[in-house]
Image 1 (cartoon, rainbow, N blue to C red):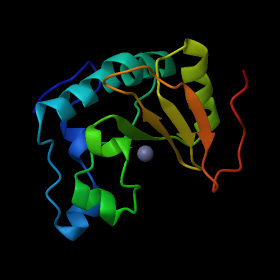
Image 2: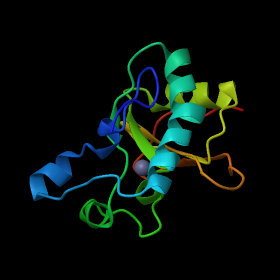
Image 3: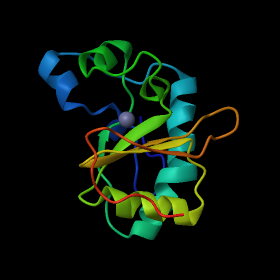
Image 4: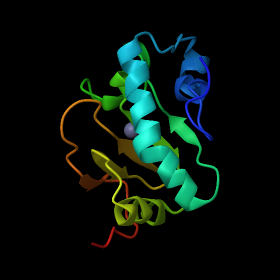
Length: 143
Ligand SMILES: [Zn+2]
């Protein structure tokens, strides 16, 4: 599938421990999904990676329908469109704050205890929402 940017490639967006465990073939199936991932990386994740200065690990990127159901994702999940990635982080608030301060064009950032969900819409305006999962009890993003 190949390289997207300096630090990201398509393969890591298909990677899923759950898919592996359950024998689900999670592959990017359409050019629209591919375009969605590419835009998410070029507009949000790579600039964030550059400013962060350390590797960012994609916990969950693209999810086919079957995988999305297996992980209990909502039916409308942006992961299924290639428009979202969960980035592992020991300090979610720090990473989210950086994305906010940089003015990156995210659609939603959702903070979880061990990762941040970033989404970016391929078409239409980004909502620039910052949300906190109910399991998250850490620092909040300061505006
Ligand atoms: Zn997510």
